[in-house]
View (cartoon, rainbow, N blue to C red):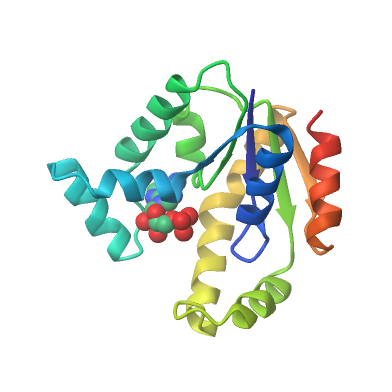
Length: 174
Ligand code: AMP
C-alpha cells in the first residue's frame, strides 16, 4: 500500500509523513533524501543529480522517476508513506502506479509564508518563499485534479495543530 503526502512548503508534509509512517509502522520515503544519497555516487548520474540539487533545480524527470520506481519496486508489498514525489503532473503519470491514498495538506499562501518566515532558514526569505509557492501552484497543483479524478485524493485542513492532523491522517488512512 502506497500513501502519498502532498502540500506546499510550510504545510507540514514532512512532519506528517514521518508521523504517519511511525504510527502505521510503514516505510517513510523522502524523495529529497533518496536523491541526496544518489548524488553522493561517483557516477555521471550522481554528478548530474548533485548539480541540480545544489542549484535548487528539479532533478531531470527520467532520473528521479527511475529512482523512485526502483525504490518502490524493492519495497513492493510493504506499507510505504512517500513525500516529495510526484512534483509535476508528468511525474505523476510516469510513476507507473496509482497511490492507494493521497493526502493533500491545504494551507493558504499567507499561512505558509508566515510559518516559513518563522522557521528562519537561509532560503526562507520572502522572495524565495513566493517563488516556491508560485512554482507549487503552477507545477504541482495540477496533480491534485488528476488524483481527485482517480478518486484517491483526500484534502486535509493543514491549518490545525500537528497532533490534530496526525490523528486525522491515521484515521483516514485505515
Ligand atoms: P526537498 O527535500 O523536497 O526540498 O528536495 C530537495 C531537492 O531535491 C530539490 O530542490 C530538487 O532539486 C530535488 N527534488 C526533490 N524531489 C524532486 C522531484 N520530485 N523531482 C525533481 N527533483 C526533486
